[in-house]
Image (cartoon, rainbow, N blue to C red):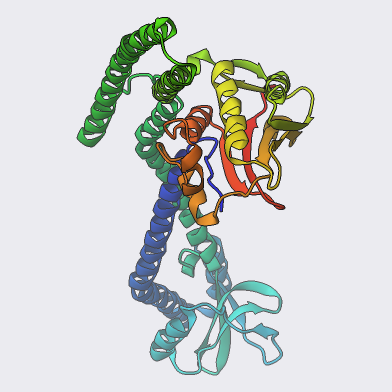
Length: 452
């Protein structure tokens, strides 16, 4: 079982923007598709009627003109039809190379209407003898003719044109969706950034109180919350200073009176032990309540800090230290608070991680740097070789005022040591994992971003 702390809050900005953009894009695409389908359906019948009427009219007029004109004037008439109207008339031969009419959705209905007016033997073609066009046959007596119209005269909007216009409208709609998504997401993105800064111990800039009523209310409430938290921090600093002075001064006076009193050595040592324990408990309360300000963060040489911690712990008679510390491990943080974290972990291991069958505690301190470039991480491990902790109780280790049953008999503090560790690492944006190690004992693993 692991207790994880993320390096930072999950970014809401990109996810919300793309989700809104995708939903609006899908809605726009479906709307355009429905619009195109509806227009095509409503336009189909009028377009069929218009094209059929045009074909029938041209064929009828040409038939009449050729029928009633003098034979010697027909050549001039055909030339005029070609020049002015784009209409050509050819003699229909049995050996003509005829291709079938255009295979579009309108053609069957056009054929039916034209044949109903001009006769069932009317033929259609898209090319005769290799000459493209819109060809319609008609008869003058026993003579058969082809009448060719330009395709553009009888075509409506093509599928490519429909696709082109739909693409233009879709691109414009998607650009509009991106703009609207950005406008919707921007206030929430500001709030997310400000929340992250507040969680990391920094005071965020005041959010603008303008825009829609809901955004104004949310930003105004957040700004007021920040002001209230700053006032609470200020009041807490005053309270901490008062506790430190008002409680430790009587303890110091009691310590002096014990030294001067005529007491037996056993009684004096007992009272001094109680006073020291009270002072330690007060110190734990102050350490837990003390905020870790990000403004105090500097570049910390964890290699040197771990080496110093290991050296100090190795001087204790009941501790055996084993180290494996890499060079050049630097992080951004408060050196005093990080040193307190390491001391608390070592002290926890010393108290509760004694090696079975031995009168001393073995503690392993390891440090390594993993990853590349901006993804480099410093991994710190502090582990003992003791009995460990039941898996179901690991989650309770980092809670304030918590001591497990196996440790109660030897507890000297208020149960805040590991809670202080968790609180300080959270303010440093570090990740803490707690688990039982293979072979027995408890392992604390800290992962922090490398300071370049």
